[in-house]
Amino acid sequence: MNFEIEYIEKLANLVDEKNLTEITVEDGDKAVIIKKGYMGAPAPAAPVQVAAPQTQTAAAPQSAPSAQAQSNDQPKGTAITSPMVGAFYAAPSPGAKPFVKVGDTVAAGQVVCIVEAMKLMNEIESEVSGKITQICVEDGQSVEYGQVLMYVE
Image (cartoon, rainbow, N blue to C red):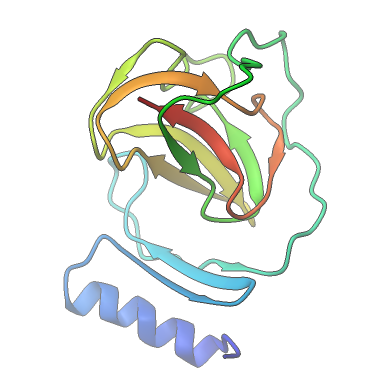
């Protein structure tokens, strides 16, 4: 499947017409994610096309070493993975409090981080309720499609 502009526009119109908040279409190593709204503020649906894995540099330098990255031999819990290639951000803005840290309890649907792809900030939500047992990436680090970001037990 080749994601052409007309196809992406039809998906964006579908999101509006059906009053959806998000739609994802994947084909091999490509995906289109259209999400309505960001950080609780209404915004027009924005198409995102993610190509095959590529090297990206972090947009913001890390200001302090992160104590969140844990190196446990056996990861515990359900993996939260990146739905796209991009940059991982633990907080909504530089210097802000992180969405979650190891030991925090989260509810299904709660935003746990952001993955920036093509200058669009994509909120990543936990699909399960539980406790954050491990955060596997550093703030500002590039992540790949399917890469484990954290574990929830």
